[in-house]
Image (tube, rainbow, N blue to C red; front, side):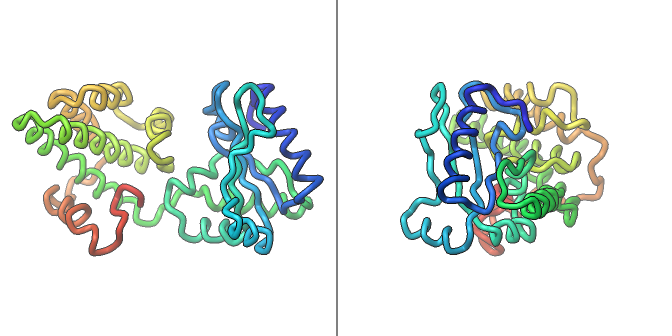
Length: 267
């Protein structure tokens, strides 16, 4: 069990006592920043309640699938509840994107209706959080193409004195440079809120990369963005025969609508 602060432990215990004596779901999973050990005193307790299909359908009909419950609040921290089913976990194992898989990192089964259910869910979580190795080199090449494109775009932003373009370039450079590093280290992309925290855990990355990311996004000048991009691209671990960046940007951004609505940002 992750180390929880006393008020968070109290909120979770009260919630579990309530659901185990009333709705009696199949299981409750503890997730969020607490499960990862990234929490602070203000962090809510994030749980996923695994329901039967019938119970979940009733919740959907009442618009009660995601609930922030203040009945168990302690020191300003409540319980953030998401309801789901075993079928969702099956889908996540089969085809979830990286942020969804990352959401299960560190997740613990804190209530189950049987020991067999507990073991089954622990095995499911392990499979969901396995890094998706298939296609990883292709993804890395795509991310690097975005970083190289941002090196050109930051020059355009500087020439035009365009703060919007500069901020877009900086955040995109950090996103895709970070994703290339995460993929190289086989670390799941946890979506934007925790990107830099995950990047900080990577063993193989340029020295001072997180500080360079902070500088680029706080002051998105050409020198700051270029320094971040150069640090990423300067690693000697990348494929040397990757396509020219303009071709990659056209395929992955300008033509992203041809293959799906999300593009690289959410893949």
